[in-house]
Amino acid sequence: MTMGWGDGVDAALLARLRAFDTPTICNALELATGGRRATGFTRRTMVCPFPALPPMVGFARTATLRSAAPSSMAAAEARALRLRYYAHVAGGGVPTIAVIQDLDHDVGLGAFWGEVNSKVHRALGCAGALTNGAVRDLDMLAPDFPIVAGCVTPSHAFVRIEQVGGDVEILGMPVRDGDLIHADRHGAVTIDRDAAARLPHAIEVIIARERLILEAAAQPGFGVEAIRRAMAEGDDIH
Image (cartoon, rainbow, N blue to C red; front, side, top):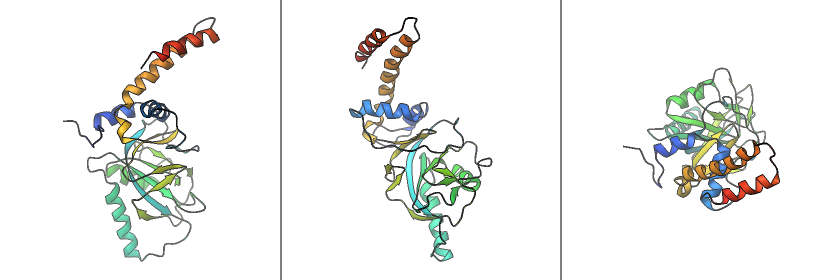
């Protein structure tokens, strides 16, 4: 039996979406939702330690962090919060993505993501990590754990989780806890749950339309008239 998570979203669909890069998903969302948009995706170049890994696709488990100054929490309280965070992101059969917003003015001063947290999250069943903050330990990260981060830094400074759950923003992309996320070396996009099941067909349409242009461009004597014909043929692909 295929595991499902509502709105037509199941393990088979997520596996299908992992076969395509994030720009393709962005294009397919335009077709599936009725037009272009300028929201719902990250807006700056990000760091991806393992760019050859397949995209991460899963459900956001949100949190916030700070690293610029020591925490005012008592040690026991801080440890309890950290354990609550780990329980929040643990997969438990659901493909989760840790989505953590760095709240500091000097974003990325200290890295939460490094050797230990990459391997801990991977072992908890987390499918990957997305943050506007920092990553470090590039040679020692879990090699099959995709991370997309805002920058690289050598220190963890005073890094700690501030809040578990809630709304966050990653480089211009608003994320709610539970949102469906697709991310790779290009950045990330949130996927409308009610449009997710339509994406495979939308991807097929986009690929077919682009193939007409690309095949025409590979022919001798290619020019504007060939573009016009290919675009007209593409209009008939639905």
